[in-house]
Amino acid sequence: MRGRRAGAFALLVAALCPVDARAQDVGEAGQWTMPARDYAATRYSPLAQITVANAGRLRPVWTFSTGVLGGHEGQPLVVGHTLYVVTPYPNVLYAFDLTRSDYPLKWKYRPDVDPNAVGIACCDAINRGASYAEGKIVYNLLDGRTVAIDTATGRELWQTKIADLSQGETTPVAPFIVKRRVIVGASGGEFGIHGWVKGLDLRTGRLAWTAYNMGPDSEMLAWPGTMRSFYEKRKDVGVTTWPKDAWTHGGGPVWGWMSYDPRLDLVYYGVGNPGPYNPEQRPGDNKWTASVLARRPDDGALVWAYQFTPHDNWDYDANAEMILADLTVGGEQRNVLVHFDKNGFAYTLDRATGEVLVAEPFVHVNWATRVDRASGRPLVDSTKLTGASRGNVKDICPSLEGGKTPAAPAAYSARTGLFYVPTNNLCMDYEAVTATRIAGTPFIGASTPYHAGPGGGHMAAFIAWDASSGRKVWTIEEPYPVWSGVLVTAGNVVFYGTLDGWFKAVDATTGRPLWKFKVGSGVVGNPIAYTGPDGKQYVAVYAGIGGDWFLLAGDVRSDDPADVRPPADFMRDIARHTSQGGMVWLFGLGP
Image (tube, helix red, strand yellow):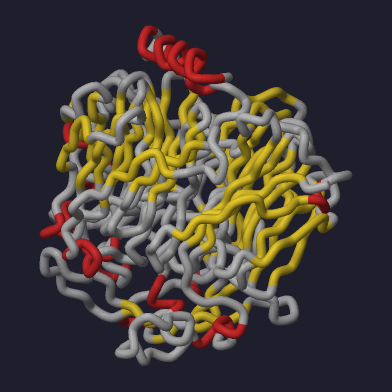
């Protein structure tokens, strides 16, 4: 896209061809118009100017303070030659003109967000980003509203209330747009919500459908003749795998990342934890929490589902990304979905049915010995089961932060055939207690202190993974948990950030370090790549430590003298390396 005339033409094409998913999926190589850049959720950029040979010449070219101290998750967007940035609460949207010197602000949209949402949000008042379609930037406000903003003027076009704060629902998830459907979900697994996804009309914001993740088939939109799950054939399992009425407040939030297969016409998303954390209060598999669901975007119909962690005892949400790829598995070419679950297993599934093709641990796992492919179920070590009657169960691996935090998406390069994954090396003790649900208040019931896992004290690793065989290809150990997302490019360079404030580039084939830069605050956001008006490749990322805020309490925060909480026990020295921030960084090649 070059100049205003080309930009206007591109918007005209988008308006005339709104239902062609492939057109939006391919886009222009130099843009980043949706959270993962493509519908397959690969976070792969086809740009190749930054290479293994020259990545050491990367330099910062521009920075911007968002004015917000907090966890800066999500990623910027680049549409045409405009950079869009969404902040954590109060969810300000900035638009910057990349065609002018110093990238000045084109406009700013500042919504009036209910401050009560901050006290209800589970894990910091974060926002996971926006999506672009048909001249609109669409994103969620923390207080349960979805808004659409005109890209030309910054004017609000519509807003729709989708969630209920009084029930503990908040909405940090990035909307996912397919065929004029804006698909959204809610957080609140720790508040005992009745988890759902909703489809809105892109043009008007009108609610088109609501599908629950637990409950009777009629509420889950699991119609006879449509469901074709590989393992589960029974009816109404969203009710029968729960105690009486427990599914009505059983959690099952949707706050992670989504993907879409245009050939199968299926949207894939992960479902979070069941509630409460004390599993003895909810005997049964608790379907479909800790699961992946595949739905049609037009009407929300459920086509298949697979549960990664039946009767979750450990808060192993399955909200992490579902990356779509075509791989050779067992000598046969398969259309697959690859998922790195909190429970520590990496899954390669048939994306038409949910059949498990490969399931191997990608971190240290001791709660289960393996996943049985015939049944799809993990073989659980009974000594690691939790519950109020079991007292304090020691040394469960991974911790409830997961083998990978679902908020930090992996990336895939078809060029190398490898997946690039930020991982945690944390274990936990787990002491469950009986919990009582009061709407809009925490419904948890467990104490879960962490400690470093085996292997010499490092709390994380950045790895390359072969999903065809289920094995690590290379590993970079990191001293602190890696909670940033990943970018991989056609230049064979992988980018990721660290909690102690480094932004790094490594060789996608070997893992060899190429470059790093201190960005001032821990990175929990996701890098992107784009082409500037000068035809050059740039990389953008947020810096702003946060996320599971209660873990990062105390001395990484300096703006509140009343906050005298101690630092987290498992990384007491993190404030020697970073503190809160809120910056946008752009990097390009120097001389």
